[in-house]
Length: 56
Length: 137
Image (tube, rainbow over all chains, first blue to last red; front, side, top):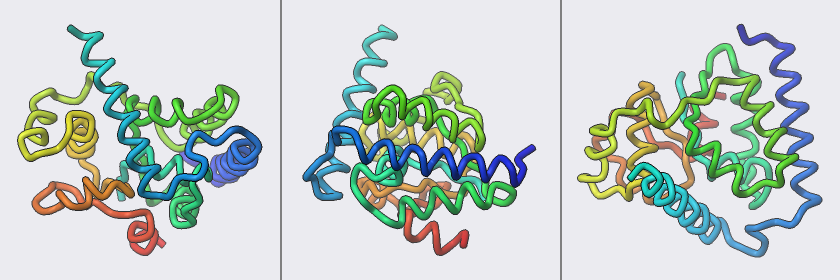
């Protein structure tokens, strides 16, 4: 069962993730939102092709 | 309310591209765990992994672990994915749509305009993070 304690813990972890991501190399650096969406879609398609190939 | 949140919303939510509505939506989903149920397939988890350092991915998994369990892709019926491909979705997008239908999602939350433009007649809503926020806040 989800509790208030879980929510507090999840929020802390998400804050930690945001802080840590901000200190690392950003693979989407300099991209607009639309460009980033296209890049993420390319990753999705590539991942999917690999999964599909692995099942053949 | 049952939500499937697309990888772009998580990725924007932790700030690789700053989209305030995406970040706010993640916080809202966390805060409203009693009334908002999140579902996530393995494919979306893997997409997020490819954009994070291993240590940060571990933190992401811990956040997801407090909110929901990860569903394996093979659970989703193949025919359901084919249905969306025949509607013009790319194969991977078809899987996400099929997954949203399979879990009985009320909404798929995405910033992907390809989903947003193919919205009519889907068995779930397709919402941007901003629209979803307005709905659940």
